[in-house]
Image (cartoon, rainbow, N blue to C red; front, side, top):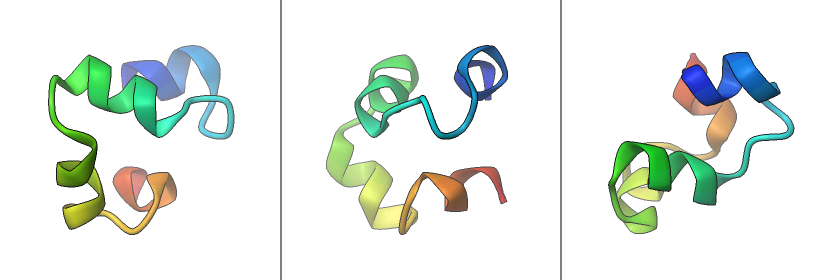
Length: 40
């Protein structure tokens, strides 16, 4: 959430999210359809 607050939902990339969360990109897509789903 920190990235979204600092930069906004539409500016933050999935790559930034996985780096911050220290998870694989595949893990994010396994659980979420897109980054909008992450904040719901």
